[in-house]
Length: 269
Ligand code: KIV
Image (cartoon, rainbow, N blue to C red; front, side, top):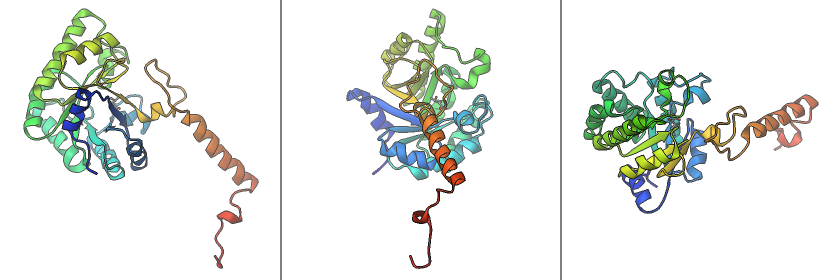
């Protein structure tokens, strides 16, 4: 089966279907989320926090994102793969953006790239799209601007900020983005942006009015007990499950009850 294309993703909301995207960073989880039937996988720079243990996404390098893209590409078959452009890999110039995005497709094996920011990247995005590189935009609480925002704070809370957000969204659409992530903004604002665009919006912490939803995989699995923002629904408690499973292994090893003969090799077998 072939991977979903940007055309198929764009068609979904028109056919009354919501787009389902999750982040993923390795081949094992890629196989699982593919089997679960997600439409798209974002190899997000959130890997800096959930994989590497950094405080924010800023230290992540392009080489690191490419490494994880390759693993996810090997592990999955059907979902569309979006490679995230990390901080410092595109902000300098449209030329730097072209070089980094090209590497994500050539070396990472993804089908599109995502970048954070608005109208200021329109020229570079236009060039990428003309060169055959599909682009997903990302507006609102864009984590690479955490220091500019002074923390992970809900954005677009004033009339001016809302107007700027709508203008940025339209500029990204006009530049050729096939879709747009809206993160950390009031639900009515996300609804307004979604209504103003022809391309689908994919929300995270942006309410019910988007054309699709994305969550960080480790968050929706409940791997981090201490991370409980309002927007997050944990669909399981893998923090507890992992601690219990590994704890049971440790108990049995210490008690000498694992391995048993069932788990042992003998010359006659
Ligand atoms: O890096 C990431 O995981 C993201 C999502 C939160 C949209 O950008």
